[in-house]
Structure formats: C-alpha cells, structure tokens
Length: 322
Ligand SMILES: NC(=O)c1ccc[n+]([C@@H]2O[C@H](COP(=O)([O-])OP(=O)(O)OC[C@H]3O[C@@H](n4cnc5c(N)ncnc54)[C@H](OP(=O)(O)O)[C@@H]3O)[C@@H](O)[C@H]2O)c1
Image 1 (cartoon, helix red, strand yellow):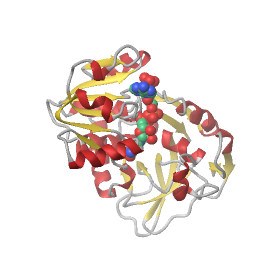
Image 2 (cartoon, rainbow, N blue to C red):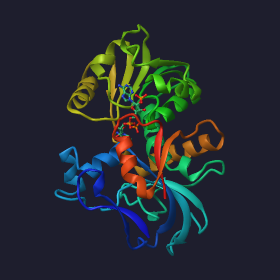
Image 3 (tube, rainbow, N blue to C red):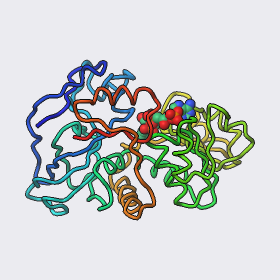
C-alpha cells in the first residue's frame, strides 16, 4: 500500500511517499481502507520532534512510528475473528493514538474510537471529528460545563477546534462570540456566532463584555489577559499547555472564583471520548453541526499541507484525500 513515512525529524522533506506492507490486524481489530486523514498542528510538531520533551514519547533520535496521522475515515475491508460490532463494508470514521493514518490501510480495535459514519457526511468531512470535534466537547461540556444562556467567547473561531466550538456552543443555547481575523469573519458568522470580533481591529479583553467561558482554542491570549473579561465564576479554557497555563491551572484550583482548565484529550478514557464522538455523529447527521474543510491535499502533497498548517492560519480543518 501507499503510505507517507517519516524516518527522521525535520522539515517537510522527511515526509516520503513509500510502498509498505498493509498493516496486520488482531482478532479484535478491523482493517480499514482509509480514504481521508487530517494534518493538524500536533502532526507538524511530531514531524519536527519539537518541543524536544515530546521525543521522550515519540523516540529520542528518530520517530518510533514512521507513519504519522491520528484520524481516518474509510470502509472496513477485513475483520478479525472476534469482531462483533462491525462488518465488512461498513463506512467508519475514528481516531487512534497509535498513529498510522497517513496510509491507504489502517487497523484499529473495534473497542477504540471507531463508529459508523452518518449517511450525509463525506469521508473528508468525517475524518476531523474524532480529534478536533471530540476535543471541543471535552473542553466545552466537561471542563467548561457550558449551558443554555452562557456567554461564551471562542478565540481562534476559524480554526479546526474553533469552527466546531462555535457551532456546539450555539447548539446548547449559549450566546456565542467568535474571534478571528478579517478574512474569516463572514465564515464564523455563518457558523452561527451571534457576534464576531476581528482581532486585528479590536481586543476582546478590553471591550467591557463579560463571558462565562473563554475558550482560547489557539492559546494566543493568557488567563492574565482574559481574567478581566470573565464573570466572577467564569472559566478560562486553553488546549495548549505551557508553564504559565500549568501554574494558573494549579493556582486556580486553590484560590479565586475564576477557574483555569486544561486537558490532554488523547488521555481521556476511550469510553468518555466515544460518548462525545457518538453525540457529534448525531449532530452531523441532523445537520446541527458541520465540518469546515478549509483545504484538501492528496497523499503526495502532504508536505504542502504541513507547510500550510505551520502558518498558524489554517481555516477549519486540513484534510488529506488518500
Ligand atoms: N489539548 C488537547 O487535547 C488538544 C487537542 C487538539 C488540538 N489541540 C491544540 O489546539 C490548537 C488549535 O488547533 P486548531 O486545529 O484549532 O488550529 P491551529 O492550526 O492551531 O490554528 C489555526 C487558527 O488560529 C487562528 N489564529 C491565529 N492567530 C490568531 C490570533 N492572534 N487570535 C485568534 N486566532 C488566531 C487562525 O485564524 P485566522 O487565520 O483568522 O487568524 C486559524 O484559524 C493546536 O495547537 C492543537 O495542537 C490540543
């Protein structure tokens, strides 16, 4: 099968289109002909092996797993002898923390983050849901406890997390403000944001408006910046860990009514992530949310996709058509 291999850390040239063996599968696993995967900021960090601390997990001098990619959408072509939840021919989508999705075939456990696709969704629209979509529910539902009537601000509203976050907060009945650059204001409005702030013209922390939840999906504004724009029991959420965020998370556990929360979604129990994933499938099926695919590339163009994601200005999700 065709796959993109990454044998060393470095620039996009380390991503090589190669012929490799199809993955084997165990008795409780399914083999999927993969039609779409994603490139995210996490993928570019794994390719570079930066920050260096990540190499403790990824491999000290070179990647332990040569085929990157967390998300897939495709069709089951073979099943292990003990598989009971799926059958050959099922169209499925999901994610795996063991990577391997920059490839034509992927094998995953039937008990992992794997479900059948809604009929109204393409492979390209399906594949980002298990990562960006599930992260948004982990943040807004579990950490932020978002509810009807909350005033919610989404910073980075035009990105992979942001586009799902605007729609999910709107769906639960929150009053949503999206923050993005000039070029994306119309798109964010079209996703249902009640108000859109162009960060190149206005600083949302200085507008005098108070929010129950500020979800900084892109980690561009610190808790210190946002504190004055939170209600007395408001919550600041950010998915990008750094020393300052770590410190504020700990301190806010001990003192103060305004809270700071962080989570590595990939480390949340599969059962919990699966529940979010199933909820998102229903929202896709009923048209309550949609996936924004900003750009798509072929497998052989994956280097270009990484370069685009590294600009830090990707629109929605970046999809690789396999
Ligand atoms: N903790 C977790 O479990 C977890 C899980 C998934 C993802 N993440 C992390 O979450 C982050 C977000 O990922 P992503 O895929 O949504 O997007 P991304 O690729 O990191 O960022 C793209 C978006 O950032 C926006 N942006 C850039 N500068 C901005 C600024 N100064 N103010 C507001 N927005 C700005 C861009 O909008 P404009 O073009 O309009 O500027 C663009 O839409 C990544 O760092 C990822 O690694 C963490």
